Image 1: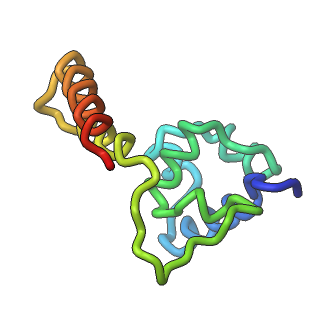
Image 2: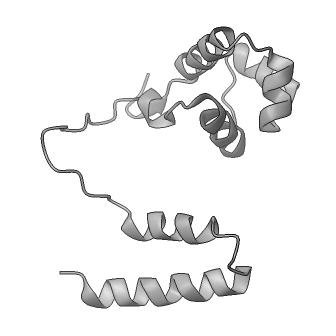
Amino acid sequence: MSAKEFDGDGFYAALERTVRARGSSWKSVSQATGVSQTTLTRMGQGRRPDAASMASLSAWAGINPADYVVGAKPVDTAAPQLSPDTLGMIGKILRQDPTLSPDGRQKLETIVASAYTALKG
């Protein structure tokens, strides 16, 4: 494997363990996640999922896809952790807020990004 390559087989194996542990079926995984059974079958044959499928499956199974990136630098758990993407995290929170309209979310993200850029050290 080359540096920072996604280990799709490892991800699928973890997903398969979760399915078995929950006494679930691939059909129910497909229904719960919106990922087609064809995609799940192809993953079992070594194909990598697209980003949307990976996100849905990861959320369903509680799997962190970053754990399956081979060659990624390990995190120093003794050091305090700061988010490398604070604005991305704020944007994610705003996009999940059902009380904001799409236009309102975009405007708020722009305001926060502008203030963050101006105020960060």
